[in-house]
Amino acid sequence: VGVLQGWFAADRWPVRQLQVQAEFRHVGADELRAAVRPSLDAGFFALDLDRVRNEVAALPWVAQVEARKRWPDTLELRVIELHPFAHWGEGRLLGEDGRLFVVQGAEAVPGLPHLNGPDDRVADVMDFYRLAQRDFAPFRLRVENVELSERGSWSLVLSNGGTLVIGRDEPRQRLARFIAVMPKLMANRTAGFVYADLRYSNGFAVKWADAPAIPAQPAPHPATESNSHAATGNA
Image (tube, rainbow, N blue to C red; front, top):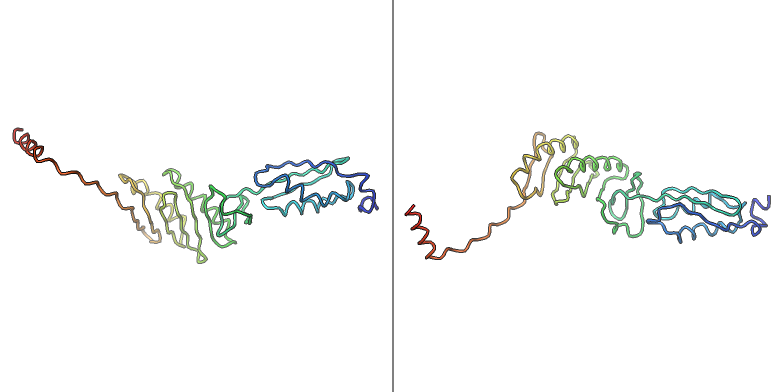
């Protein structure tokens, strides 16, 4: 009982090896060693695996921990990291599993869309982002921002800077209606839209980017103009 409780003889059966299976993308080996070191003093038999799991799980970027002992002197850890799916609101990240978490330097994580909404609507925002991302992909546009207001109104920002205000009522149907006419809207246009309001029951309003100004042509030389008239007259 004394050995199992760690009261004595811990030095006779110490834990000498720590084996870790992890990605080591955001969680470092030094962090893991520091987290488990206080638990190792109890020795192999008294090593509390629940404590080890809790200490490691408390580290930033850790999603899941498995811990087990292997005779005669080894602690084995399997650490699964959080995979960020998007930025959420201010200063938080959204994991692929729908979990919201805070880590140092979250704002600087690159390549992620920005999503926002009530915390209890995380799944809905993720689903709507995936839907919109798929719909705009044929037009080589990415969805960079999805906003769900407290009142339930949806809006998007695309990679070309265009903003869509979709509103509260039937957002999926209204987005689908807009996507259906996108090929006609974009035909013969070199610049994309800057704003689209889809809150109308039977249509939408679109504001287009200003067309680039045509550069002024230099005035023709008088002699050239005279020759041109002469050529026209001869013809």
